[in-house]
Length: 565
Image 1 (cartoon, rainbow, N blue to C red):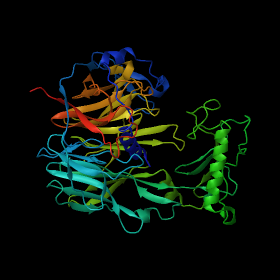
Image 2 (image 1 turned 135 degrees about the vertical axis):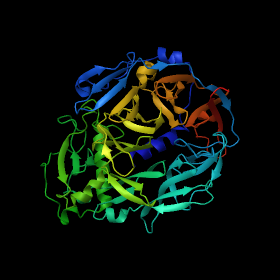
Image 3 (image 1 turned 180 degrees about the vertical axis):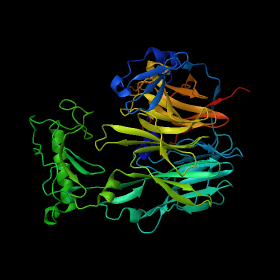
């Protein structure tokens, strides 16, 4: 599961778990704590000048020469220009990652269901339509299409997702409709997953596709990744996987003991192997897969019992740095393992980009390398694709941006970005992406234009209390950007507020309404349309820990901000 999928399932699951205490914005600022230091002078490079923006921004150049404008405390915090009211819908909607609107004013959203989803796993999204963004009704998707994204262009609604392609394989489809889903035009992307993954030691599949459309052009970005469930058959017999392993573009890394010399309490000792090892013979990998998996699980359990790994397989901070990750005991290149390197690198994935041509048919136009999280935005000047890629241990990442004026020719944009792209859209007429640092802390809005990323660090603008806030929902739309942020997300009583900006130059913070007496509430998503900013709140009886499923579904309230008049 890639980061895009994990984020979506995380938000959906949290909608049934996280209560939403309300507190004043002043209280949040007063309860602020010091934000973790995120960047050093060496990382940012030399400061090359100060812009004449009233002290609001500093122009910086990173070590690779990329320009960056960091908006600081000079950015404005203003009273909300929206009128906020509580509305009880007749027919609510489940979690959805934003909404889109066609020219006739219809608003569409993908959701797990109008009722709560199954807490034990993801449910295929369904399409819903609304005339006002408050009350929703089901709309039809094409048969057998598991949709993962929607976009709108003029009077046309687009849906992208996967569908069965025969046997256990799948294909990626783009469908469009001009009548609210009564009839769909369907196109299969020219992506042959079976051929692409031929020779890969595992299943190759498509992650959640992303879609964007403007001026009659449509772009789809698809992350294709290979999954290796068990590396034992590939590695020399007796390879110790007690401390884990990781696949890279070059091969497989086997991790070693993070606490050498520490008493092991029964864990199997790890002996460093040579950096390069010949491919195993058939007899060396003859152990049944089930036996190997059981042995690996036992070894991992012993390592955890010895205090060298945490309950989730993380490094014990008492003997090694979590940021540094586990030491690498041995590496095996794909060639060492008898696998074509051009196929093996599917283990870290590839981002394939498809675009419509003059004839309206899709063609693959770019292959942009691996990515763990992707956001695709259609802006007036260009299509923008922001992607993040982690190293094999997940301890560090690189975030980059690419731009295309026509959707077909893509170039790397010389802008500096940092963090996981959570969501993206237009803000002040520019492509903007919400980023969160790798440790789940500080939030930034990166506005992309030309060769500069104008970055707003939300904690610097909103106050220290929201410096490392948790995101309970965020979305872009015609009325700008809106998010529900929870101060001090590690605390059960961390207060939550709605943050809104119409164009990125000023921000407002308003309290969420108090829950009804005897009930608790959880954020179920945020939508931004041309008419309103809407926060969906699921309401449960106090003490109900069941997520409102079964015979006791939740009620839903909406906190709606509309322009005066």
